[in-house]
Length: 419
Image (cartoon, rainbow, N blue to C red):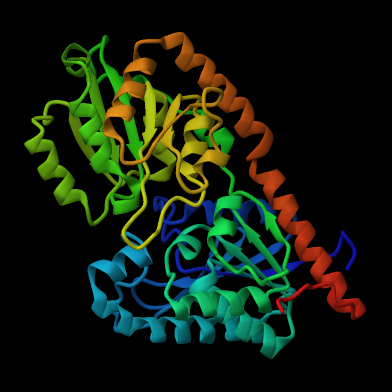
């Protein structure tokens, strides 16, 4: 295939924005749009919340499949698949229907359109569907691990399934080295391509603080948290750290929590128990297009990630890239792939997870040193513009797609499998 010939790529995903305002795996929409801007046709297969339908969203065809009775479809979205399954074990009953529904939708798309490459996002369950479709249609399969599929789902069956999927993939990528290493397939000879997810730098650098800062006193500091309110995000530790701040600094400090999830009620109770009701505000889910204003208003961004009981943790931490692009200084924890995003003391500060006192010390240090905050933020902005632009990342995936298509056309076998 020549570089001028148009590629058609089928995305398989368990999460994709349900509207322009939705933040669910919004990075996949940005990725699809970046690839489309380079002339690649993208067809997305993702679960529906209600009835299935196919819509054209900009240049992207999105085929949403129904996998269960509409009122009971609770497996995808919300707090995420793994958190949903932990909270409601009965949802495991929906998993076979989910896989069957995605497979049927994928096969319909492959039969109807001349797809060149299948790209499965997350090893399980999309990789399973992709491996079956690859075998039936003889189309190259790219599988990408994003984090939860690597750090969680570690029972013998899922380990076996992950290994099978990787073995059947023509190319395998992960967003960080930590994600790749967490998969744990020591006998696999497949070379993993490390390609991070990116950020819309132009969107997040253009935020305006004017309206939101009017809600604060001129001398107040604003700490921002953005993310799902689930165990691995560590928001409980952030509230404890806030309570440990020097009393005079605490009186000057507000914490805004943007996001929703199954831990919201327990976090609200913790706020009352710690007597932080005057300091903390829950904003719920915010339209992605409005998030830049929240970052712009913040003095400090904190991502206190931890490891959930399931083993799940941050594979990369895309919100950190949003903070970088918005030029707000960030603090995060040394866990998962975060250390590959933040260079401690250069593009932000890193602390140990589950260490509220260390986090409180770092917060105090940065709030009391505006020049240091500004320097770290400037360094982070330079990093994000150079490494994490979607055009750069889309170009790397396009190279993989074209190489696989060329290999399949010439009959070469460039894949390296597992013994």
